[in-house]
Amino acid sequence: MATSKSFQVAAVAGLLAMGVTSVSAEKESSRVTFTKDIAPIFQEKCQSCHRESSIAPMSLVSFEETRPWAAAIEAAVVSREMPPWHLDKTVGIQHFKNDRSLSDAEIQLISDWVQAGAPRGNPADMPPAVNWPDGETWLFAEQLDEPDLIIKSPPYTMPAQGQDVWFKPVVDTGLTEERYVRAIEMRPATTEGRRVIHHALARLQQDDPENANNIDGVDVPGGLFMEWAVGKQGEMMRPNSGKLMKAGSQIAWDIHIHAVGEEITTQTEMAVYFYPKGEEPKFHQSLMIYHAIAGGARGLDIAPNEVSVHQGFHTLKANARVENFQPHMHLRGKAMSMEAILPTGEREMLSHVDNFQFDWHNNYVYSDDAAPLLPRGTILSFTAWHDNTETNRANPDPTQWVGWGDRTVDEMAHAWVNITQMGDEDFEAELKRREALTSGATEDEQPEP
Image (cartoon, rainbow, N blue to C red; front, side, top):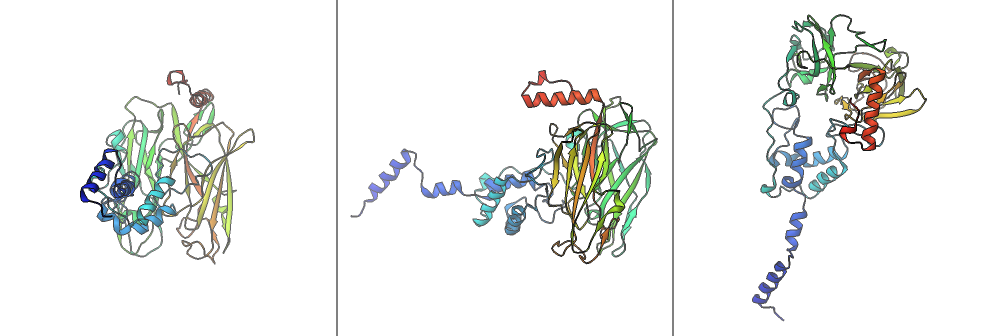
């Protein structure tokens, strides 16, 4: 029997009155789209690099810019190649101040979007565009205002072809009074410079720089001032922690530059943010190099066509808060872990990078209340794996023996770790503060840091 048009209209009106929507409307609301679901993820985790005039090869700001790369994006996020965060999420500390990784739910959402044909969605769902600054800016400036001091290395021109270069100029800081540092950023001065600068070190030359601290009568090393490699933004000290720069100090640069088939002139620049004049932080922070090689760097021995394992051990001379973990290896680097062996004999895995990528020397900065507190006498154990086989796509020649060396085709195995040294009284107070947080004490009940 044919149904009259008026009956159909009445039936639809009745369903709408009961709050029943059409199947197509339900499908539309549940469909994953760029404007509603994907753009917010890209704004938070991707666009700081993937935007016009930034360091990434393509922009992921608009739908038109993103859509041609949909399949490649899915492959990169499902394999966790992007965003670059190569930490093993199954062991060790998992709370970081700079975590840019995607959650399992975010990865699934991106995959669902691509599998559905990467639809745009309703333009009205698009979140407001992020107001990214034009060109390169100092990232800490948003929190701390503009840098107090900018130090630059002299320019260096790298020819299109040639051996690796280690450029080591020394420049004056220009300081006329001592100041305490609360944050540092360092980078190649241009996007082109990032192509030829593998990494850069900045050593602070002043009175007694390598043995600058005495904690409860124990001398502890002063460490490096700053290091840069691809993937590292900078270092911001935790509250009441810092480094001292003295009047008349100098920066000794050590910049590793390699040829890329095109002549490029570049330089490295460093931004320094000071505490207010007269403000002296209680704790001193040192950037330490810890080798994952027994007997020192020259003991690195990587046989042809093998995966090798090396370990190094370093004893803490003072109570310490470990601020970060930044593995450093070259083309055959596969994985690195940092473990604490406590004076009691207990072992604690702190972090394990199970998918090291030479192009991204990520710095994993622990959250304020997750940064491990380790007593004097703790041994930091570093284990490094190198893959010198043909299965390693980055390996230039698996038939060659490889040892330690500065060249990109040589190898290294160390970690850059910021250590904040503490006396016994301050260390016990920080332990009690952490215990109070764990037990759920209110802020007023917590001990002073």
